[in-house]
Image 1 (tube, rainbow, N blue to C red):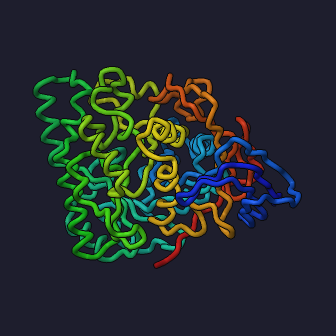
Image 2 (tube, rainbow, N blue to C red; image 1 turned 90 degrees about the vertical axis):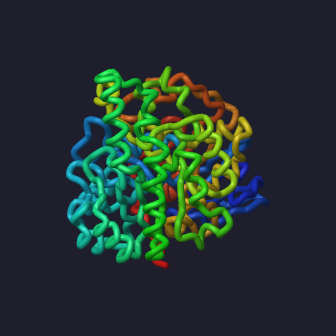
Image 3 (spheres, rainbow, N blue to C red; image 1 turned 60 degrees about the horizontal axis):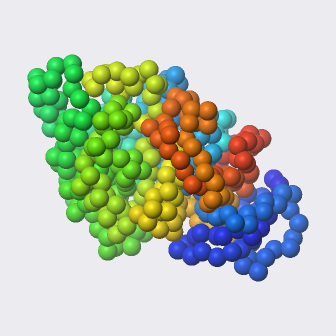
Length: 446
């Protein structure tokens, strides 16, 4: 593997900012030097005036392969991720067939090894009757167990109390949960169908998939985790009421219960349904401005540990249906870092906090081996950002297979110029080098 020398960049890493050179060899960072590095390399990148940051690790994406590849593929969505500075992803099991057996899970890993320009891991999915398969999961080589404690894309609702107790009491692995109470959602849906028939407004989505539905389910997951001392990670928190469930005093590496917030819940609120409609319909729902403000507070004060995307593409045609027909989910992985850096420029968060929540903390939360930081001896997963270039999100630069984004028309004042994945310059100024695929993530067992 070729060597790379990054010169003169502003390194943003571990709550510090300093100018330094970085030397990469055989996939790993071998030297970080504030006084400069004079060694020759196969490739030198002049990062003068640029930000050099650890690559984003997105712990929640849906790349739709196998079975739903009219929406997305591992190949296309991994390219979009890398173009946006995301060097590693963890993908969800609600594909077709679902990744709820070891055999199907292995097929997804084999597919990624053959086509993913980014580093990868895949969750093992839980159902009401696959506890034996769950317990066979390799803790060293699989990021975690995913439970849909509320129905979402795909039919993987886990609502059997015996099953839930078995998973929480027996698996040593991280359990990632989608928390929405199905009984509450069905009741709310029936009320809105009775009121509106087939013309339910999209603005009703946060009432149908309500705060109550989220809180009931999150409390259930938290209660089980505390009862069995399980390692629980609650995905995509969307309400102000849930913030109090989480701890901002205990250091992340000591927490048994962690939480994440997604970029769309930070960026949009219920006022945007009027213009965005189905394009921001997702589960859990984007809620109200008061919730949005609470999410920002919780993120900046460490109640939330991670920022993710829940990248969930559907075709434009699918999204044009009425409320009950339009599927939930929106594509975001190509633009998550630029979006958060834009929020930082607006003063909502610091850029060091962005790096912490999108890189460092994800590695710590999942115990990922030698990633998430710019450190000597770590894998070289690096993004180089131009902080002074305007980029408009438009159809001709969107790399998602679905071909659209809820951010179209937005102008970012940063550009992703280079993305290095496991020591390989996978993306550079709009061009990909696919001569090497990404690596499978591995995890420390603690």
